[in-house]
Length: 104
Image (cartoon, rainbow, N blue to C red; front, side, top):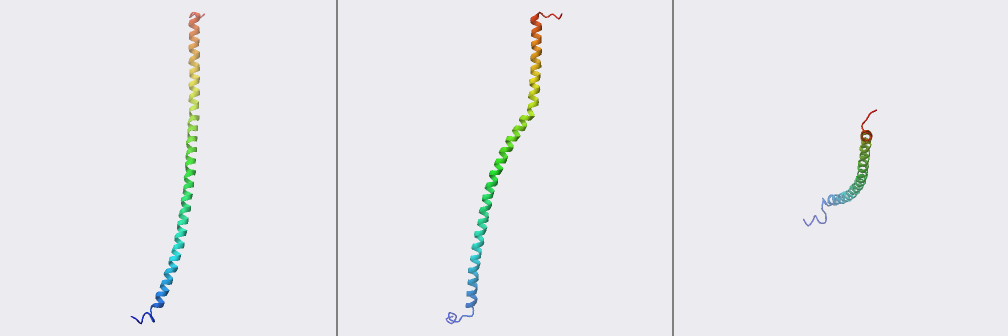
């Protein structure tokens, strides 16, 4: 065993393997940095998309309300016309009764 410290047949292979391990660790470190950088970019993009989505949903709610209001307008106009007609009929009947209820 004392001889292996000075003239070891596998020493060159061990040094080569250690060198390769160091290179792989450096590559892994670089790869991890790139992966985490990409994940960070994706998180930021996701946050921006969430803001856009929230804005779009808010505008959609507003547009939905406006459409519902537009759909109700004809019904309100019809109700107003019927109310005016009933008011005119009631006014005519009241005038008729005030005059004395005679037709001719």
